[in-house]
Image (cartoon, rainbow, N blue to C red; front, side, top):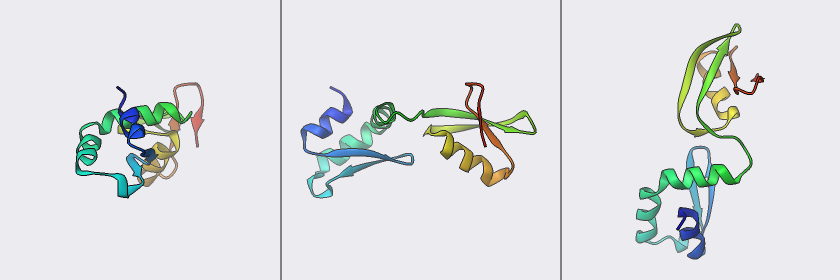
Length: 104
């Protein structure tokens, strides 16, 4: 059974909020469900990312001056999330999507 299916069967809705899983309604979350969410967090993140039509990756290339200067790694993140993270350190950077397009 998929992790999302488990939550849906219990009347819950899960959404991505950055790199977190947001589950509602809170009043339906029991201790058993909290443990399930903690144990299956990565599966939930993966399933939610696959269902929203937005590309999520575990790594993104940081481009500056036409050259790769770093690779951002971590939990599933969008190009927008990666760009925000890159620009925190390198304000003039871009993110390479690998599809021939850079996000500026």
